[in-house]
Length: 146
Image (cartoon, rainbow, N blue to C red):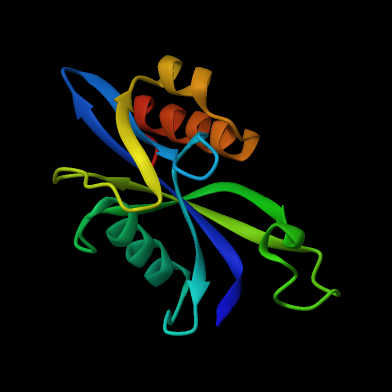
């Protein structure tokens, strides 16, 4: 059964002294976003969900360096069909970044992926939660904030 939370994961790398961010184009909506998914019963904690979703949607190893971000959002439970009952109106979205060391592989949920600069990425992201998280990550990386 799906657990009442979501995760957002931003893959990044540094190439030619510039940080690049990997965005994914969803097959169902055509929107550009980062890796997103929900907790499952077999996940022992949120970081495990982050690593599982990163592997399922992008082929990333759990051995990569994952960083929890301060960005936090909520998502209306109606988008998931109120699977937790009508008393659960929103679920939290926890945000992480991952330093991608291997090649990205797309899952069946995505049409394609693309590596972009901050300016390019921010201009095509659909959701404000993704834009806010990208701003935080970009600022931290460029200012060497852990």
